[in-house]
Image (cartoon, rainbow over all chains, first blue to last red; front, side, top):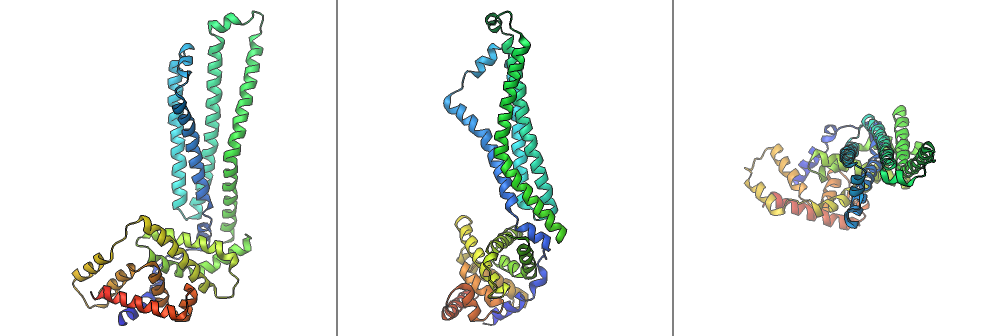
Length: 207
Length: 164
């Protein structure tokens, strides 16, 4: 078949038309692991946001609104929740953006930058969550300690400084517990990213 | 996997990357899909590399793994991506004013090859790479006779697409 011979001749001429990838670009290509790790970071952050909301949705709204109302914290609730939602959604958006750019790039330098960026974002995300928890707990405690009901019930000779100290220790312990929990979920993934980053650096030096 | 192994693999891949590019050209129809397939084939080659014993040439082994990856992915994507039907191609070719210049013929040929099935593309690819039937047979894991029969069918099919 003459036509196929024609095609064959043309086919063998095309070698120079393809982009030539360097060794470092090729080794980045086979380290696609990073993109799947970042995908998991995105999925976990999303689940962490969605699951508590689903639980609230299915168990019915608890009495939190009334409690906030009783404590005179309605506007505090609105403000803190608004800030919380905006920031968390922004974080989820960042996770998504990192995932998209990591999976689309084969340039080792950009991939390394992305890995660093992702690690930073995760750190900020964890710190934001812990700080929010701490601040909200302190505000609620402060309000509770100042309700007439609480003041009536508490014996006169109790030293409020000690009560505060005990509560702060308990909150601090809870924060540490959350922190450990985060380290467990995100730490594993972050370490994998770090290993991949190290490999990329080594390859770049060699190539 | 050790670092030496990776370096050896990357340098082998670098030297033979055009094979992967050509397979991508045959199995995809845009740059984005081309790059995706290129990466997927590279990863599969790297995963399979520890099992490569060096009995055959790296390029021969590469043809097999890369084509397998392309065929598998092509099948997967076919379930989701709507591909152009055979009739519409022959219609298009008929509608084009038939020009006898080489360039025009080549265009039609490439278009026709794009519409072959995954296995047929693999056959044509190896044929275009100037492989003999023995090599084609061993790469695709069929007998030599079978490869000849299949290739003849592909030639006939192409002839039919080109001269409806």
